[in-house]
Image 1: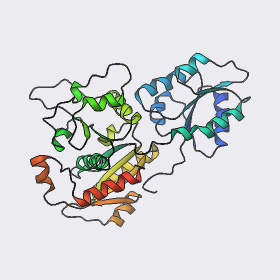
Image 2: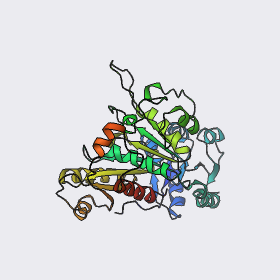
Image 3: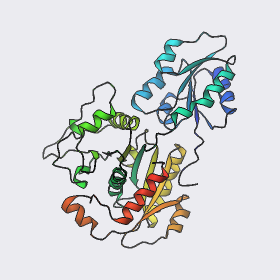
Image 4: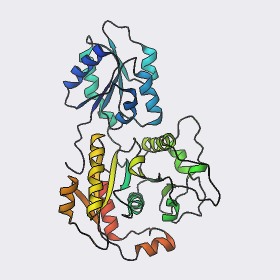
Length: 355
């Protein structure tokens, strides 16, 4: 497996009617894309991210519509109805379908729409939504997440750093903006409507070099706020729809569906590599695009080649132990001018994900 999985984006067939589903799968199989058939409505939300196109009928339309409200699904939705029709336009509108077809009568038109589907949906230049997770504790995943955002801004880009750890001390501390005004998670009011990416950026504290930070708040009393998956999904989805790079510092269990790539920071140690191998298998099954960054701590038992053999993935970049960085972060936050090895690794990841 390569560091990034192949870009043959999948066509998701979410159709409840069995006969129509068979026709849809047959049509989709005539394209150059993989086909993923989803029959359980519970599987739809995690099937949408990264899809090339979504084929849906009236039985699944409202499930897809609900999933699109909390998960970023940039792929076009194409609504299908069985011959001789009619087309349920109310259901088609509910799931924001771009086109509707009677199948098999209009299979040629459907194939033409599938062929054209990907062109306007290419990732915007300079944009990506990246999750950063540690394969084990203490590998510096949060520091690397902050470095990704900082490196993007250093290249005159736009970056949002989101803290998705439920018991984080706050990424605002890591970047030295704990005293800056702006909303933290408990103060972020999003309501039931859509979230505008520009409004989100304006509401948050920012570093002098332009990194917007959404972090946990600190309190000496019991805080009833709990960061739930729906709120995280909506905020990350809004950031994904905007310009720039969104970096989410999270655990493997809280990776938002909207993330286009997952960076796994793994220590050059047996247990960390073994954990990364299991995580990569799970993420590969979910069709996630993954990047492996190798962290060299004070003592390493494995070489990069040995880690690659264990995790069955290419090590894209290596992070050595950076003398004095821990002290610098404790005193004033992550330096605006990053140490060269950290900057080089962050740049390699951003280039790999297409930024």
